[in-house]
Image (tube, rainbow, N blue to C red; front, side, top):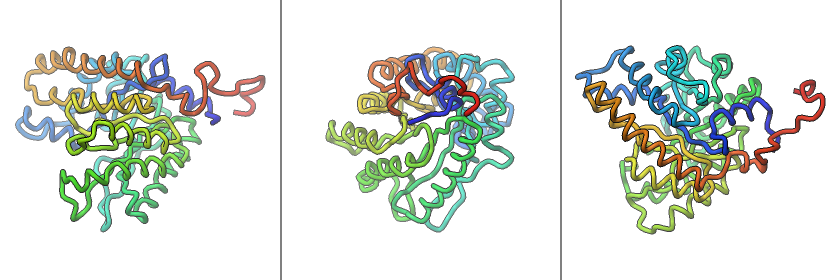
Length: 330
C-alpha cells in the first residue's frame, strides 16, 4: 500500500521508534463528568474537567507514544499549558459526545464547528472518529459507513491519518451483560473490522472480540483475534472499553500476539484517579499505579505487537517512494 508522506509522518508521531502504538485515551466528556461527580459532590464545572485532563496528561503523556484528547476540554488546553510535550503524538476526536437516536439504533454525530481541517491546523498527528456500528443492522450500517467515508475523504485532502473506533451496542430486546450477546460479539467485531477497513482509513481501534466473562475456552479469544487481524486491512489496536486493568492487560497480550500493533486504552489505566478527592492523592496514584500500568502494557506491546507499517507490507526503512522530484507530485 502506498501511504502519503503526511499520513506516514502522523503515524510516526503516534508510534514508538519501533513502530508500536502505545497510546492513552483521555477524550472522555460526558462519561468523565459522571465519573467525577462523586468527588465533586455533583457535576464538575468546566475548569475542574480541564484540570483533570491536564493532570492525567502531565503524568501519562511521557509514557505514551500518543495521547487521544477531545477538542472541548483537552486538546488545545494540554498544548497551551505545556503539559503535552512535543515528543508525544496527539490524536483529536472529531465526533460529538453521545449519538443521535434512530428507530433501529444509533447514529454518530460530528461535533459542530469542528473539522479535519481544524485538527490538522492545530498541529495534531491524527484524527480519531468513534462510530456506533452494528453490521447486522444493514441500512444503519450503510449510513454510518457514509459518515466515515466523508471524514476519510477530508483526511486524504489534508493528509492526516484517520483512526476509527467502532463500538457495538445493544438494541431493544438484548439484555445487558447477556451470554447471548456475548456469543454474537466476536463475529460482529470481526465483520465490523472488515467493512470499516475497506474504507480509506489508517488505523482501526477495535473492541476485543470476546467477552472474557463468558468465554470459558482459553484458546478461543486468540482465534477470534487472529480472525480480526485477517479481517482488518489496516493496523489495529485494542481499546479498553472500561474493563478493569487486569482484564485489559490480558486482552492486550492476546491481541498483540495475534497481530495487533498495540493499544489505545483509557479508563482501565487511570479511572481510579477520578475517585480520589485529594489532588495530591490523585497525582500519587497516577505517578505510581497508572504509570506502572502504562509501562507494563508498553512492555507487552514491544514484545509481541506488529509494527504499524508491516500491516501495510512496508519496512521501517522504506515507507514511501521519495525519488527525485517527489515534491512536484505531492
